[in-house]
Length: 90
Image: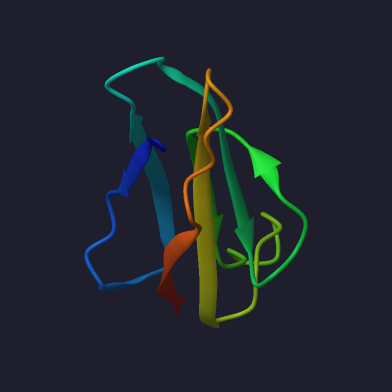
């Protein structure tokens, strides 16, 4: 059976948001957690920050909607079906 991953989003609008992914697997344990933004390349990790630029000092994303997808793989090789959410940055 594939792992199950949840996220901490709540559908709000943010200037900066720290995404936290929480995977679980009852049998063999979680091996890797992957995420991608707007169909880009898969990255590994359980947390990352999305933010807009602040006074042109901190690099960030332009305001708008961003689709975040994620999935996990367990130690037995089972891969979770990707799922995700849309995050709005202002």
